[in-house]
Amino acid sequence: MANAEHGSMTVSQDPVHVRRRRVVLIGLLVALLVVGWGLTRVLGGGDGAAAPAAQENGEAAASGTDDAGDAEDSGDGDAETAEGSTEDDGNGDGDPTTEAEAEFWQQQPGDPEHASDTTALEQVDYLTGGLTPKSVMASGHGLMIANNMMYSHTSTVFDSRTREQVAVLDDSLELAEFGIEGHPGTSKGSPVEAVWTEDGRYAYVSQYTMYGENFGVEGFDACTKDSGVGRSFVYRFDAQEMDWDQVIGVGAVPKYLAISPDQSRLLVSNWCDETISVIDTEKAEEVGVIPLSAAPRGIVIMPDNRTAYAVAMYAEQLYKLDLEEGSAEVVMSTALRPRHLNLADEGRTLYLTTSAGNTIFKIDTSTDEIVDQVEPGLEPRSVALSPDEKALYVVNYNDASVAKVRTSDMEVIDTVPVDANPIGIDYDPVTNTVWVACYGGSIYVFDDQSTLL
Image 1: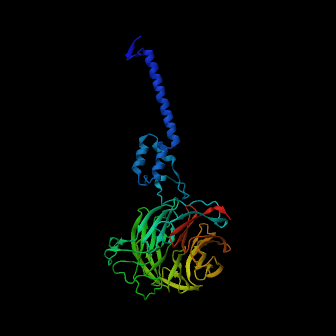
Image 2: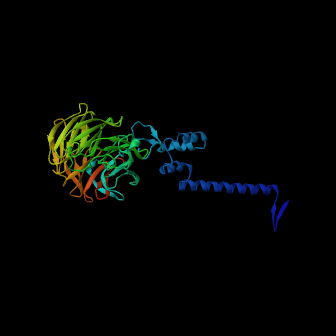
Image 3: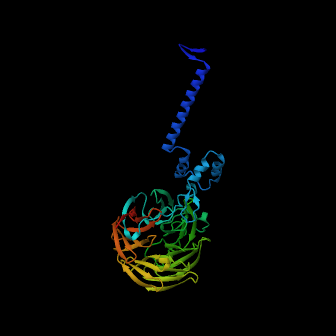
């Protein structure tokens, strides 16, 4: 028997003993590998968890086709893992979409379990920090934009699922970089309202007044078309780039905006000009101006893409617009201070809110006559409509409350308190939550599915 001597210890070199030692060593190595693999699976550190983790941290991108190709060609199972992460994109065509292909601004609306007229509002968050929100608007695909009018000179963008700020947009721009002449140096705006494109990619934001070179008289609420207030602009926000990408000239003190169902036209109510700007979205320019009357505000566009309704708040009138002819006619004298419009039932129903009249009217658009009404609180202002159109959500500015109205019979079915001067509201269909902007510097978030009435 051959032995090798190591100090006082001898190790047998007999071939049988050597083979036995090798078998034992190999067994130990295999056992260690199995245990390590099992721990990796349990703790989520394996290849199968790597792709979702990267996506969550923003490391995966829809343009990463080279990486996808590498995974497919590597033969190490990564391609199978990527295939396993596919899911229906929610558009009804059954095409799978990987998480990497869906940007965080491209989320699909949730599927509510309950009809909106059977549920109560339950507060789930209270957001503050750098906010003086005049409005808050949902993209319908996972983002919210809050416009911090005049006092902060910013618009704040939130992820509606995490409710975290993902961007703070400064309204200071070099207008020359956007092809706007006559205003050298830096110009500042003052965000008011917003409207999103249907795909959630862009938001158009009205700038109440501009600050800088050659803008004329600064905007103010009591202005008229003879006050000399300078023309202003609408900025376009690109959700993919997280920045402003267009600046479009409009009238003096632009307030509310509406985009046509076919996305070809943008309407902007110009408070001081007493007009509606008609913008060609492809050209990104004003192509028409429709005269109205004192203090235009709320606007909606009918499914035919040609007919629109708008209110003149100080004139206390409801107008019907023909966008092809560029004309407008008064169809109704309203209660005091008509402010907001919502369209439902494929254009057959119009909801008109009068802030000084403390009333929301339900109007049949086939006759332009009032068929029902409700008083939701003191000075109702902005209103949001649920996706199933069974409920209206309205901020009562002088009550510091939000009322929920059942549209079938125009009855208030829920009321919740908020901070003083609630001014903006919208419904996020991705999370089925209602967001409420209060002038003093806060945003409430209410869940609209968890609690039944």
